[in-house]
Image (cartoon, rainbow, N blue to C red; front, side, top):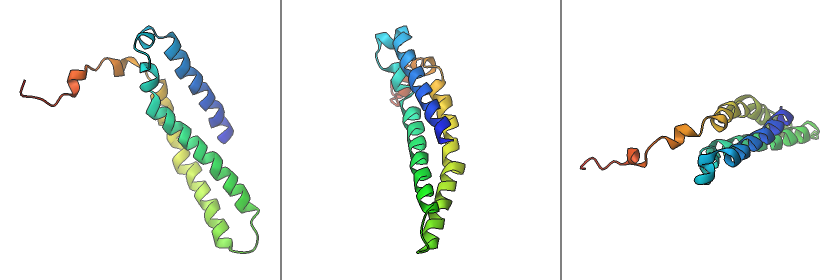
Length: 118
């Protein structure tokens, strides 16, 4: 699963970079394609990195000695939690990364004004 997500992460990096390089509006207003995907991209990256580290910790805990078996059990259980509950969140972030940039660009900056006295 970590290998799959690592490969998908490379693919998503490529897609964001290609969108930024090929999108005319993104070239004119550098960064829109990247900034519209940045939060989802960073969250995706964080979940994959977290899972990779927990996989290593789980492997080390599996080799753990007879001392403190509860400690090693907790490590394995935490790793299971990361893979079952946190890593699946990458699906939503992938959708956000691949979503159209246009929906973010279509919103006028005036739409964020709370000055209703005008």
